[in-house]
Image 1 (cartoon, rainbow, N blue to C red):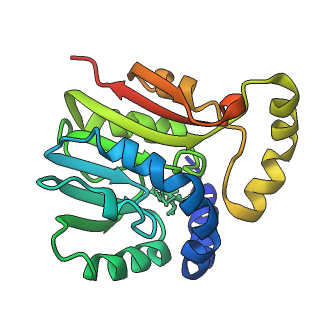
Image 2 (cartoon, rainbow, N blue to C red):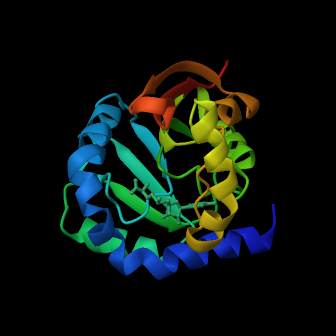
Image 3 (cartoon, rainbow, N blue to C red):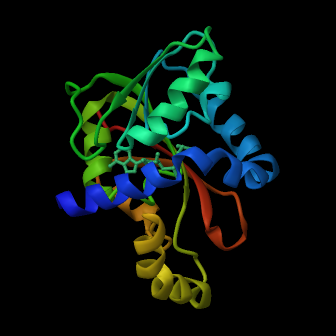
Length: 210
Ligand SMILES: C[S@@+](CC[C@H](N)C(=O)[O-])C[C@H]1O[C@@H](n2cnc3c(N)ncnc32)[C@H](O)[C@@H]1O
């Protein structure tokens, strides 16, 4: 893991943080909202880790009776999440600045680990997914909403070509092979749902083997 990669991601999100919710508002209304609801309806916890909590967009979808620890690399994004949290007194969320690639939690801590649109920007995604596995209890679940490299070859090769420039500008990789990254990190895939055509956005559920 390079320090430079981490700083690049952090600086891009710190920069965009004040505008993030406004820029994403249209797609949030159109698509993300219903996907978030689908994902969080499956979470029972009670001890939940949200990786890359960002501006706290998932807070509204947390089920009652769960305790969430939300981590993020970007202080700018966390500042927005803290603001949102002050409006949601009933939510049990602890926010921490932390790198998903090197987490400050003991092994086997969480029942569920959740990340939405995060492993496109974690510098070393397999390392982050291995860390997620380490801190999850055996039999615990990983729940992801992620965009990734398309299934079709023409679109996928265009994504491969654009991946570097887009990453430089935004900190985001558009051509990650996230399903295979999850497997490579040691998770057992339970199911994968395509949410868009071309397999670009998927909901992934995986389990930590006993
Ligand atoms: C596209 S945003 C998504 C935010 C939020 N999950 C959502 O659904 O709106 C990606 C977030 O992942 C965070 N992130 C990227 N790499 C990270 C890492 N290594 N550790 C922790 N957070 C990271 C970024 O700072 C950013 O807040």
